[in-house]
Amino acid sequence: MTDDLVAFLRARIAEDEQGALAACGVRGQRVPAGGEHWRWERSHYNDPLADTPVDIEAGAAARDEFLAEGADVGLRSIEEYPFLATPGSGPHLVLSGTEEVEVGVGVHVARHDPNRVLRGVEAKRQIVEAWRAAKIRKVTSGRNYGRWTDGQPDRQYPVLSRLPTYATERELLGLELALRLLASEWSDHPDHRQEWTP
Image (cartoon, rainbow, N blue to C red):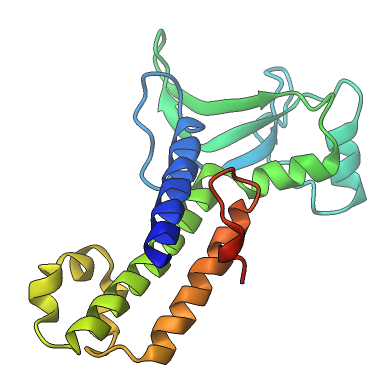
């Protein structure tokens, strides 16, 4: 059962990674390592405060600016990309204008930019890998662990090198619970199984 759960998690994590990477950058440009950071900014070219961040979580004045009729606020990347047709560079314009964006939606979108999603992807992968490494350590009783893994997890996931060479049943059960809890994020996915619910 746990092997199917791990396969399910790896597939969902990969989908989240692909989605975050697809949201980054300008067509034809290389995506920055770790993905983009997004923020709301004043964006009209005639605005003397253009490119100034608008922190819609900072209080009523910022929210009013975000919602003001005719306000020219856009969601942009902090990272800049070279312009294709002219010299210079500029941010990735993710969303132009806020006419139909509610404050709560604006906060949520900016908080869950590709950079944050990709950090979550990496953390989830390390939890899955920790379970796999613990399972190998349990099976091998710590003997020849390096031969079983060929050292791969330790290079890709340095946290695993700090684990003891032998995994206890309690550690394995704790990590299995963590896998089930991770899977609950995708409980509405058609491949999710009820038996995985913690």
